[in-house]
Length: 93
Image (cartoon, rainbow, N blue to C red; front, side, top):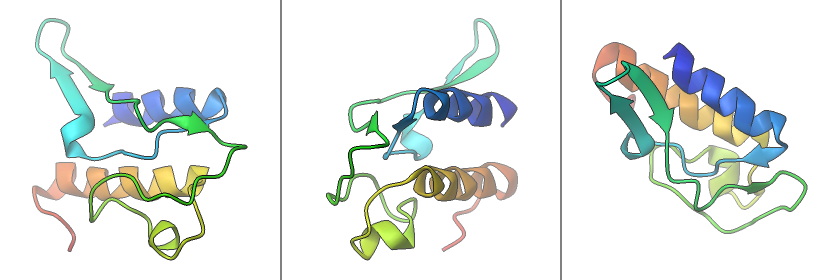
């Protein structure tokens, strides 16, 4: 979990928003026992708002669905859902 959160931290340090965090975009490498975030296709600059909806339910933040666009907080929402799934083995919804 730490590696995934740390990877998102570095994406945000670059002033970018992933916009498509979900379990299908998390990769595990058995060779070096590490986790990675993949599929940066919808990743974009935080200062360029996008009202389009990317990603998969239930990982999309409610404010994005309501048309307010993506922010760093919407990535945090997505990764929170992902961490719930990792820790419990179930989707929260």
